[in-house]
Length: 453
Image (cartoon, rainbow, N blue to C red):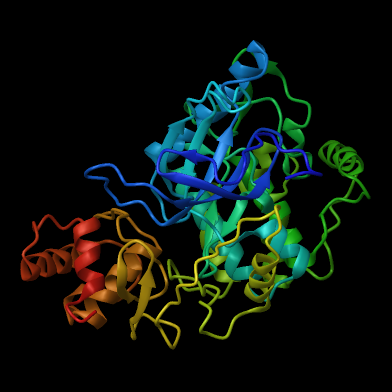
């Protein structure tokens, strides 16, 4: 690890809990992430069982000055609180939290360690290899879905950017790095007084800060999504300038009405109005054009070519023909750089063709083994119930109808209405589960296993 500065330097082979630290994956101002393998025994009754590989995020909460310590602990507490409370398919999964107790290594002693789902790479690193990926619209739809899940739960991300978007081995998206996230208190949340300038709306570039931090709204994430979408689709920022400082000045002039928004001519027509609305110069104009991320998601899905609430096309597992973005990620993983997550797992999905709603396909899950999928949703424990909607609902409908022959579920429209509720109850009674009409872990397992895997 010589030749590079790390927020938390951890030697290879270091043990914490049942984990052994391997190579560094990424490092920022406040944390360093390392690959790790399970080298010890899991605790009795560990539920769910820990994976063989994970990413360990070390936050230096045991060192530094007292003022710095308070700040770092607050960042760590934000992320831990969110990941403990929220479980959504588009948010990175946290398996455990640990605290280093090692007086012999004072630079590590007291550090907080988050045990996280390990990813194949970051969108930021992927864009370095494929600046305008063919899969860009599908990725943006998944990112927007994750943002909607976060907002629906009452949280603001606060630092959405390509580096904080991770891709798993099957190419699916996870939002990550929630140490700037904040829980809404009515229409506002309070976040630390800093963020990434290129993805920060004009009203927060020089905000008023009180003892609780900066007041932020969900519309700040909408602005960040607009910048990110413009970057993914055109490989350029929507405001002029050769540096972050210059673009920040341009954003302020834009907010005052003295600078035009200069969307790239390469921006596809279906996306131009979406990006323009996301980048409305003020919070008030933004919420007038985009009421919430649920409304934004519908527009993004349409622009990406997805039907309402349908699972968007994911980047294919390694046995399938892959878009250029996944090929770039695989090459990046083989290079084992320290700027991106990389999976060393050699497991292969067993599917030989992409799954569809009408033709569920067998795939391999690292934690649960083989199971059926009808769109590579990949969730085994995300709860859905009557009155909800989304891609997870649609996949359950597809499995009920086309794998288990319960046609009474109706169309796979992603809306958990009365027909879906009754179909779930019918299925639960058939397999001997509690017939409560809620699709939780046990029902997902039965839906995916189908008695044939």
